[in-house]
Length: 437
Image 1 (cartoon, rainbow, N blue to C red):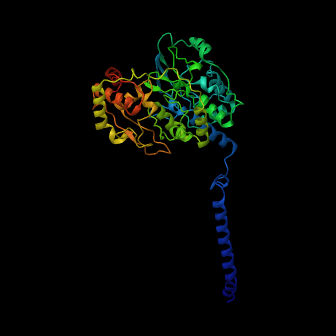
Image 2: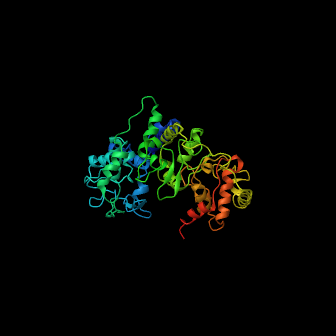
Image 3: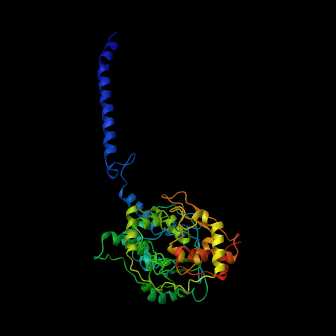
């Protein structure tokens, strides 16, 4: 008979205690949301241990180096290799870099991995072909190399034997690489420039090292090498039939008169108010740059914007830009029928989704290859975290003949005070032949 009395006496205390707990929970929640994001404790998980932190860092750096783009066959297992890389000398087949001990790099040590990155020498002493960008990766620090290795050792191993290269004689003789290395390879980690800011140096480290941007944006000679004196001055990408524009000329893709925000947007999102990435650069943004931090992308933008302007060719003269009236009229007509709906009668577009053509340096640069390919093949900007639903351009190769395609490309290169030069039907036809049937 006494138990109900005791319960009745305790009930006010229970209610009071419950109220205190509720107030405490509300207070803690309020404190959590008032704290800056970087100071909030991670929900539901303890801070990662040192090994996990190194692996996470390595994953980030592997993204910066775009390793997955070459070492993953389309539709294949990640990092298992097997992808063909066409070169002027034959096909190279990218190796398996998963931690499988028999067919991958599972038996490698961090020292051996660093030697490969830093010197371009494989575990067994074999000299690597320069399609592996060791001439850029040599600038990567030992700490970052070890982190990348730790990450690669954490991915699922795949047992997939490496495929032998298919290079023509004499390029299949690796001993010839000794001469190539003497001409074009300079070993050494990146050394910060004390005259520049920490941000500039971080950008230089990423652009010159892991980003290996110079591999595409510097012309390649018949030996597969490039001159440091012509770094970033642009050139055709071998066997891909895309032109990587000069980053040092404001008449091409030079970024000296771009805002930092437009450069960051182009690199990280794939679109900006100044232009859109297509072709090989779209793959770089999709696989790599979209995953970099805002701070690192801004550092890259700072470095790229500061590249000295080195125009290797004078601007075209007014005589070189003369277009036959009938070609100009045909180009204007085709533009009005096929292009104006998206890019506007005056070529101003609707950026960032639909890029402008008037004043667009990628339209007016000396090489018309990219403009012709876009008209024939169409294309999409990459789907990125900051631009998940990109606009695309349809192909017109089945609609326009060579004369019409040449006329419309000519029109957009010279209309609206653009400073490009005319395009011939023969140039269109050469690129049309490359379209798979």
